[in-house]
Each structure stands twice: as C-alpha cells, then as structure tokens.
Length: 223
Picture: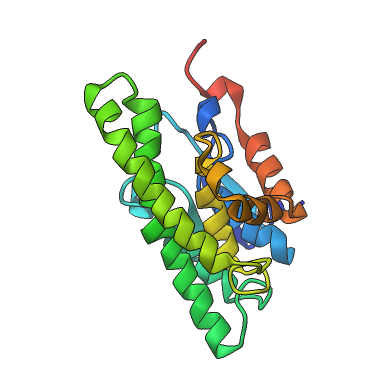
C-alpha cells in the first residue's frame, strides 16, 4: 500500500461518510493514480461535519480531494489526476496522439458522462419521494443510455480507452461505477466488461481499501 505519513505528496480526504457514499468519494481517484505507479502519499483527514476553516483556502467549496505535492496545491479531482499523470507514462502516454486522446477522455468522463449520473443519483436517492423526480427519471434514463451507447461504441474491443491503461480510465471507471446500482449496464455488456476490467486492477483495490480504512466511525453522526 502506498499510504505513508512521511510521503511528500498529501491527499486531503474526509474522516467519515455515510455508507452509500463509501467508495465514491473523489479522493479515491488520486489514491488510485498513486497506487498505479507506486507513488507514496500521506492522508490528511478532515472532519466531514465540521470542515476546518483553513481548508477553504485550498478548496473554495470545502470539498475533497485536495493535493499537496511538495507545496504545490491543487483542487478538483480531474486537475489532480492530470498533475499526477505527468509523473509517469503509465498514467499519461508520451505519444502525441495517445496523450491528446487521454486528455480528451478525462474531460469527456467529467463533462459528458458524470453530470447525468450525478443527476440520476439525485433523482434516485435524495429526491426519490418528490413528484418531479419520478417525472424526470424516464427521459433522464433514455438520455444516459444514449451517452453510454456512444461510449460503448468508442471503447469497442479495446481493453482501455486509449489502448493501454491510462489516467483516462481512472476518470471514466470512477464515474461509471456510480451507475452500477441503477442497472445501467444491462443494456451495455461491453461497457460492463470494460468497467469490470478497470475495477479488477490491484491498484484500484488497494486505493479502495485505503479509503475505507480511513473512515472513523466515531467521527460521524450518532446512531
């Protein structure tokens, strides 16, 4: 495992989240990137319920993750992934076209796929008893399937988005996994195979275990 309190790189994460959010909090993304290339990182855990005031100096909305790389600080998981990817060609290919495609797919994951899955999460979880949610869901599902169908065509028979595994697959897989419980991949079997391949990587499993181990049950609300 790459968690090392003395590491030069530090990832800010939350000390507790409810069960439904575990495995989905976005510090999983830089954790996974670090695990892929054997890059040690320290954890800086902050309170979920009472964000420290100085955290807003580095993340205007108080979210996670924040990366501190030897004094260079970044927020937004996509920016952090791209920063880490520059450190190793296992995350960012050096071929010009492969690099351009990797960059495009990172933005594609966060701009063209994630917003609709986040909306579905809101409809199915946070607003499930609202009338507007039941009215919105059918058209939203149709739209999502349209996007996933195009993505499935783009993946085709490749193992990964750009052929070899890259930071683009970290971005895309962590976005797509939000649709598993909604059964979105029943109609997209090749996409399910792609996602399974990504999530079977040992580095992903180590990153997920590290995130889950960081949660302090005493930090959350009382039962």
